[in-house]
Length: 200
Image (cartoon, rainbow, N blue to C red):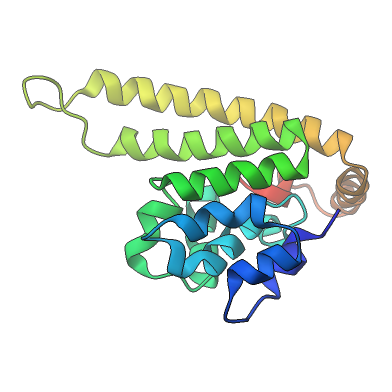
């Protein structure tokens, strides 16, 4: 399998479509090129996707950041314009969603797909829980806000289950986590998570 992360991140050419054909990744990131709004930034969005949704992405091992903060950092690193933030980070563009789904399918790990799905949904739930939700009377719908907050909590539990299962089934990560645990146990007492490779 082609290392999509390395191939996409290393790109700095003038014809991203031709490059995708060359490395046989058109089926994954091609939808970006067909969208009028995000098409001109397809290569940068592809970098955002492989950094944010790639199992082997070093960006996901950044400690101390939840996905909300980390996605912003990756967005900035990909050098995307601010007016595409909602399209890309908040997943309000169909072409971006298609490319992400294609990339997740390409990696062929159901637990990783579940983790990323729960992670994105939780980010949306958190935003709605603290944002403005109105009822039919144009008043703040506190009941719905509370439900979204509870859903966010439940999604965090689902994320942790998917994460632990993913780690156990991924030899490289399992070894890294076990090594990390040994180091932590030899130091002063700590409550740091042993699965910090992809902070929620």
